[in-house]
Length: 403
Image (tube, rainbow, N blue to C red):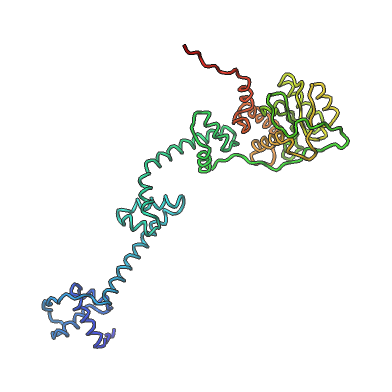
């Protein structure tokens, strides 16, 4: 390889740079200049009047000199490079902490895991959090751990309630169930935990029209005027028909009679047709449940089954006064339609139909029974209809007399 030839001025500047840095070695200066170490050593010997290759005499201690602007700038650049390399290494380690979860929590955890090596101040500066936030996070760690353990236990109880409800209960009913079991819990906390574990109540499905009015039928007056409440049970009822889809077969139809006081399903009937006998059978079931419907009001829509002479005769024999909503107004019969929607939502659970008619009948029977005895109702203070009626008829509690 051919030897490089350096100008005399470059050699003189190289020797001067070495002599201006008392603490530097020949090797470090040669590396900075990009020349061979022995080449720089020979230049220094030549400048001292010694032949190349001769042993160097101890160099006289050069007077302390203030580094020039070039040397100071070079040192600052080296320091900045080291800092940037360290920041790169820190951010590489921090990347796996930021993959998911709460950003502030993961950043604080990273600082806690690496503070001994890099220091809290430097780490907080690099990953962009305030030191006060980290110290607060560390100070509240015991309380946070206790809260997480409590949430874990609450999640276990929420899963049990949600499973027992066949996966239908949302936040309000789950909260009521937990409170009745003695759990002091806020509905917002229940909502947060349910989101965390991926639980939710069922939502409404699209409606299917079953009300087909008969223009020639005789209509009854509206006796409730959109008042969907009653002070006492067995005084006001609403009725409706809903269809039960069956896969690959003709659907079934469900007629219901609901008490507006307790929202109890007093009577219901299922058939594979929508003739007037369907609603007559539901009314007969309600009369059997209550013992008598004499004097009660029965409110319904203008479906041909309810306006039929057959149903009118059944109501007259039972002592029931008929009431009908305005034509095309679903709000006048909202309680019955809400019951229908809830039943299908919580039994189908997203499916389009039941596999067979038998499955549909059993699902309706199971849900109707559970609705009256177990399912909590928002209008009843999160109590079931029968529990609400029992509370209405329960004797008042009296305090013991004191001497």
